[in-house]
Image (tube, rainbow, N blue to C red; front, side, top):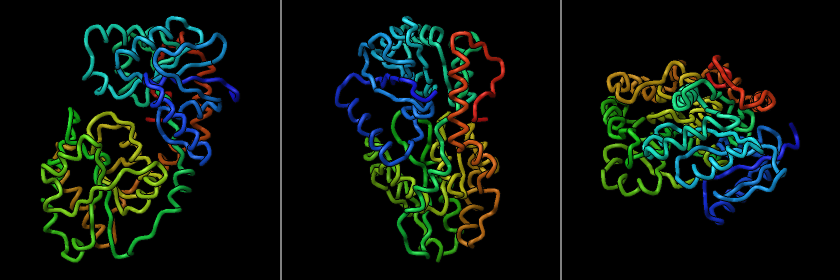
Length: 367
């Protein structure tokens, strides 16, 4: 599979946006780092990759495969349809979170999506839930769950260079990202209410040395301050960080609480698990349930959430966190085996795409 020529249709229509991606992934290769995102999937196949803007023509015979995430913009859908109907080169469509596509669908877009998924050589999903969503749109089994470019060894290597902090402090990552805007259904104040329920029960000495750290997107900064989310708790809003810096930041945390609604990829959960951090995570994500089988939860189960927060924070205060909050070492080793993930995706490509009629749903690395 080495030497495979791949193009990735980025879903952008601006030269500057595309060149930012080119620069980002050039930097990645120079650093020897693979970001666990959709644009890194070509590197699991061991080939070269060019990034394409929407509408960009593809010379005959230049590529062996075209990849694209399905994000639902009108220009991207029309471009993808033009690519999949040509059939040469074959196109692999990677479906993003269903909630993102669904909130922007119209009748005309739905028709485009169904045709793209039906005619693409490959339809790939990063979880069983997303696979079922794709097959439901298509009306027949076709999508396959693929491994993701998670890498436990590389994550540990990057985090080993983390900066030092005072040993008597305790730092907890709290929802990355913290969302207030749009239809995210993350209900940040439900989480805060559960934290406040247990805050006064914690030893005063511990409360003086613990801080909660979070991140927000640009559109959420104003809401973070306007709603007074940080009032009553030592919550710190962190600046944006590049990938390696963020991995080192997670490595310097004592625990991770990341309860985000939706079928997200679970990259924060993987980083926490690869670095052996105790934590609490949303149960909606399949990867979360695999990595932290004892401490995944629905955000709206406020009673159980309060109990779990009490147990985790009390354990941090006493220096004896219950082992139920720790990740599954077996799942970390399996999901973060980059070489095995690479071989698995290469095998899927070799097997071919248009004839897929899968009934075995668990073909990917993610359970």
